[in-house]
Amino acid sequence: LAPINDLTFIVTGSTSGIGREIARQLAEAGGHVVMAVRNTNAAHDLIRKWQEDWTGRGLPLNIEVANIPIFS
Figure 1: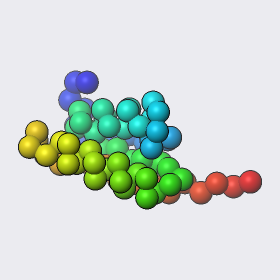
Figure 2 (figure 1 turned 135 degrees about the vertical axis):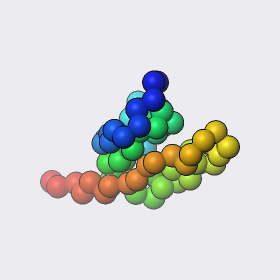
Figure 3 (figure 1 turned 90 degrees about the horizontal axis):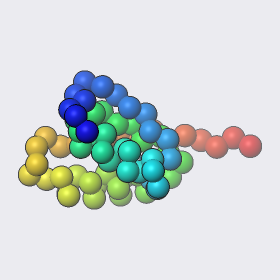
Figure 4 (figure 1 turned 30 degrees about the vertical axis):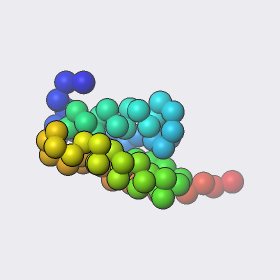
C-alpha cells in the first residue's frame, strides 16, 4: 500500500482472516489501526507478533485494541 500516515482505520474481525490481513497491511503502510474485536487477548498477541516482525523497518506500528461487546 501507498503511505497512509495521519489516517485512522477501524477494522472489525481483525484477529483472523481478511480482517487480520487488512489490519496488518494498513498498520505497515503507516495508518493508525483500531482493532475492533471481542477477544482482546488474541488482538494483543497479534500486535506483539507484528511489532516483533516489524522491528528495524521503521517506526513502531500504530495499533490499538477496542473491545466490542456482544449483545444478544
